[in-house]
Image (tube, rainbow over all chains, first blue to last red; front, top):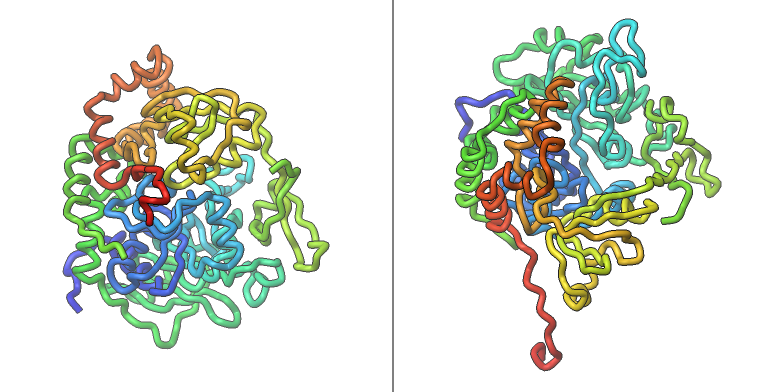
Length: 289
Length: 195
């Protein structure tokens, strides 16, 4: 393999996430890293993957990066330009094989919080941090045949108990998802910027599956609040390939997604945006079949 | 839809049910186990922006539909803004594109670029730097108020807003969209032509 020598935390996260997507998947992707992962998968090992978006776009082939789930590139050369109700009905019907979602807090069963961090002495009504809420994440977590979680690995984010369960993972483990009446299979992997986690087939508890180059098992364990289980066959993840990085940088030339620019409050001058994006899509040759 | 609620297999097992008393979980009377009921949303007025509409209010959308068809139908009053008004005869050429029919519409306003800074499929792409400016401003209450004064309250109308954004900038956003996708030309064919 032709591995990239230099890559950012976001880039390896997107590359590892891409590998969770199979060629026969119908993937429900959110914007940001999940979308980048979907696009990279489609351009490399999974050319037949069908990417679906919350706004109703299904199977787009675009030279542009959608900035939101209802942005116009979500239906460029698409198979379907449908409705939100249609996409979510298809999700509940069981057509979506993999959903990719993020979270601000995650527990050992892959339950996610994107609603509110209560903080000490805080509550739902008076939280320390109010987050955006579910969006479509709860539906994806409920009904996708399997889900992949994408989150940065930082101290305090992987906790014993999340303040608010926005998107159900394996609830309390074992068969508790099924008992609650949920249709989908729940999370199969947690992709972070430093390690990859998977879930035990019986207990449904999250365990360390692979560490990224330069990390140690001890370093990873320190960042997780509970006593993390480690696979006896823990491996070192291969770095992103040059091809994967090239695709990401081509679609996101200003690092808007990969550099989290909007979140950081950075503003690109309009002329830079116009020139860079025009150059980016003009240089991409689409294969429409 | 005219229904008081819809059942869903989402939300089960989550804390959304715990904190939102409007959502009820019942045992499905038809035997599939727990199911959540979500009440209907019934606004007084809905604003929907579409690509094209006729003077009677028949609205055609190109690209994804989002929630537009239901957002319009759940509301007492519906105001449509559109990129362009087209004759009803054009609507009739491809009725599959009509998402909101005239009987669901209260008013139609022709207002090009009124989705800016968001995108309208086939017309203009998203003005991401403009959104970034707002995101930056929204880090504080004062920032939002200042932004609203500058971009909403101190402007007379939509034309002044577009002038302030810059006509050249809008043309570039249009180019960035239409380089990639446009509504295909719809031509009515005769049977003889097809054969």
